[in-house]
Amino acid sequence: MTTGTDRFAPGDRVRTRSLDPAGHTRLPRYARGAVGVIVEPAGSHPLADDRARGRVGSAQTVYHVRFAAADLFGAGDHTVTVELWEDYLTPVEEDAP
Image 1 (cartoon, rainbow, N blue to C red):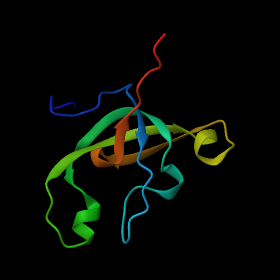
Image 2: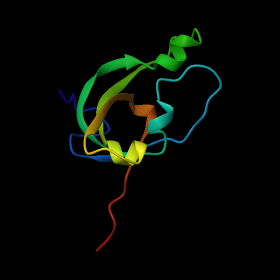
Image 3: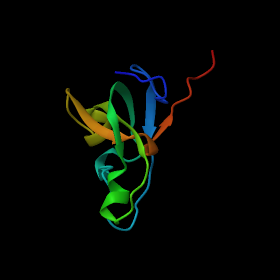
């Protein structure tokens, strides 16, 4: 359920960040830099990366994000849905007409 403080809404196109941090991250390598679509918010939780480093961190929205398998892996006619924290996502600006 959207709380009104969520940055993204279902149907929004987002791009995952292209980062390769030292240590733990919950952003899968195969999804880095990929464009997907927000399916729904999945609650608010502290960033798992911070918790793995012993930091408390503040809670942020986690989203179910759907990607075309072909975009992630170069083949496939199905989709892949990944739970991703808001910090991993940036909006995709639509092309102007």
